[in-house]
Length: 124
Image (cartoon, rainbow, N blue to C red; front, side, top):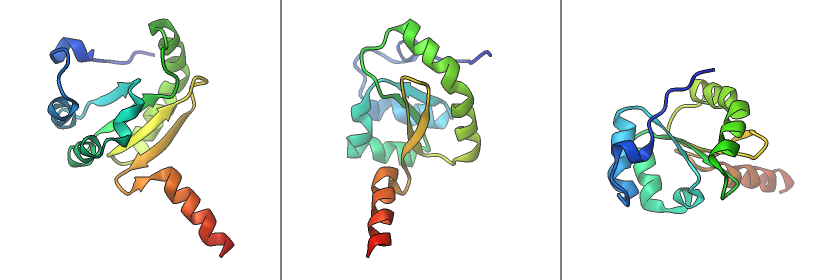
């Protein structure tokens, strides 16, 4: 299975603000793959993800080697492709160490918060 990719460092200067490169990613309809779990908690960055229709996948485990990320992606890529085909942008999804892909946030907000709100509503 071949996957085309563009390394961040080959397109953007080191240390560039996320707010500067996210519009380019959206315009080119690229998919973001990152280990930066903080991005989904930053309101300005989430606003850019919404504004530019970005699809982002975040590894849930930190400090992964390139080889480990490659092994995880071998499992995760089919689910990532399916998600991109069935779920409209913008969204942020996580990739577990086992390769499971889960939508965590979309244009309507946190999927986790909506799930818990729905469970609370059921008990009322």
